[in-house]
Length: 426
Image 1 (cartoon, rainbow, N blue to C red):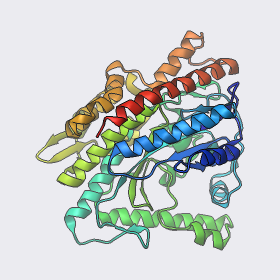
Image 2: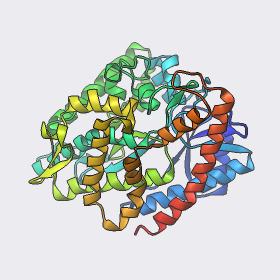
Image 3: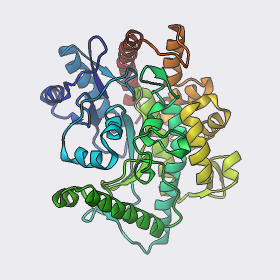
C-alpha cells in the first residue's frame, strides 16, 4: 500500500511508519518496498483462508491506528492517480534491477502495488535445500504441478477483471487496470512504456508448459539469461552470487516461488472483502486440481466454454487466446467487454461449485461485482465522471486527492465488515 499525508499527497515516511507498527504489534509482518512511500503487509501461511485473512486484518488495523497517530492516510489501491516521481530505495537488490531495466523503467515499481496469492506446490516436487524443483518419476504428481501452474496462468484475465482498482495514471484515465500496462507492457498489451517491455520473460504472462521438463528448462534458461545480463551490466560477482538463485529473477503474474509455492501476482490491491473472496476462489480451484488430480487442458472448447468440466478435464483456452486477447481486453475494458464478462462468470461458476459451501458468503462480493459489471475501477471512474471529467481530460490534483481520501476511508470501514465475515468462515 502507499502512504499519503492528511491532504492526499505522497508521504515518504515509510521507514519510521514501519518501525512504529512493529512497536505497536509483535505479530505484524510489515516490510519495506522499493518506494519510500510504500509498505508491504504479509501474513503467516495456513491451510485455512480464515487464519491468513484474520492475521492480515489485524495487521491492517495496526496500520490504520499508527496512520491516525501520525496524521497519515493509507491508500489501499494499486496506483496513486496523481503524477509524481517516487523516491526509490538504494538497496543492492533494487540497484541490480535498475541496472537491467534502466532508472526510468525501474521507477515504475515505485508507482504500482498489488496483491499476491500463494498456494503450496504439490507435495514432494520442491527441494527446500536447493530452493528448486525436483526431477521426479511420479508422473501423477508431476502432472498435477503442470496442471496447477497452467490453471494459475489461465486465471490471470479473471483476476485482472475482478480485482482492478487502477484506472487513473498521471491524472488521466488510462485503462481499467493501468497497473497491468505499466508493469508488464509489451506488444500483447500494446503498451510500449511498461516496466518489463522487452523483458517479458521476467515480467510478462508466461506460456503454458506441457511437462515438468519444459518447466524446469524454462526456469533455468531464464536464470542463465539473467546472469549473462548481470555480467554485461557489470554487476559485482558477489551480488550475482548473493541474489542469483534460479527462482529469484521473475516478477511476472505467475511464478514458481523459492518458498515452494505457486505465486499468483495478477491482482491489483483492493478492499479486503474482495481480496478474501478472490483468495477463497483461488484456494479451492487449486485444491481441486491437487486433491482430485483434475486435468487442466488447453483446447478450442476453452475459448467458447472456458472452465467447462467433463470427464475430470477442465478446459481452458489456448495460451495465445489468454495472452493476446483476454489479457488485453481485461486490462483495458474489464467487465464492460462481453468476452471478459463471460470468462469471469464461467470461472466464478466453476469455482463456486468446488468451494466449501460455508464460504459462499465470503465470495459474494465478487459474485455481485460480476452480476453488476462494476469493479472498484468502475466506481472510481464513476466518481470522476460525476466530478465532470471525461476519459481524455486531465483531472485536477485536488479532485484526485479528494478521491484518494474518500476511498481510503471507505476501505477502512469495509475492513470491519470483512472481519465479521471471516470470523464465521470456519
